[in-house]
Length: 198
Image (cartoon, rainbow, N blue to C red; front, top):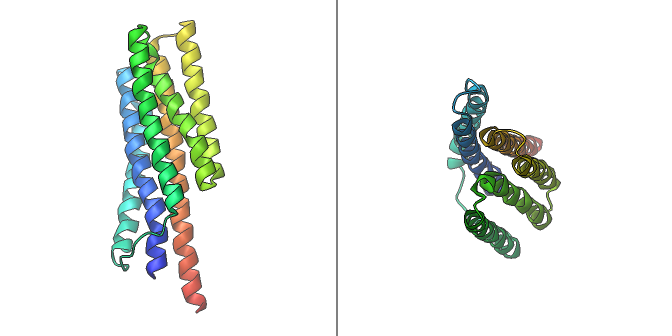
C-alpha cells in the first residue's frame, strides 16, 4: 500500500460517509411522515443497509489509517465548482422554503427540497465527469416531480406523498453508497494486484 492508495480511498470513503448520513436523514423523515403505518418495514430495511455502510466505512477507514498521510491533489477548479454547486443548492432550498411559506404551500417543501437535491446532481456529473450522477439525479428528480404533482392534485394524503419522496431519496443515497463501496473495493483490489505483479 502506498500514498496514492490512501488518497484514492479518501474520496469513496468520504462519499460513503455522506451517503450514510443522508440515508439516515431521509429514512427518519419518511418514517416520521408515515407514523408507523408501514410497520417500519422500509425503516428497518434502510437501517440494515446503514449498518452495512457503517461497517464497511470503519473497516476500510481502519486500513487507511496505517497509510502515510499526504495532501489530496484535487483539481482546484473542480473543488471550487463543487462548493459553488453546494452553496447554490443551500441558497435555493432557503429561498424555496420562504416562497412556499409566503404562499401557504408548505406541504410542497419536501418534494421541492428533493427536486433541488436531484437537480444538483446534474452539474456535479458534468464537473466530475461521472455518468452515475446523471442516473441518480434523474431518479431523484423524477420522484420529486411526482411528489409535487400528487400534492397539487391532492390525490392522496400528504404524509404518504412525503414518505414516497423520502424513501425514493433514501434509495438514491443507498445506490450512491453502494457505488462508493464498489469504487473503494476496486481501488484497493487494483492496488493489491499491482503490488503482487511487482
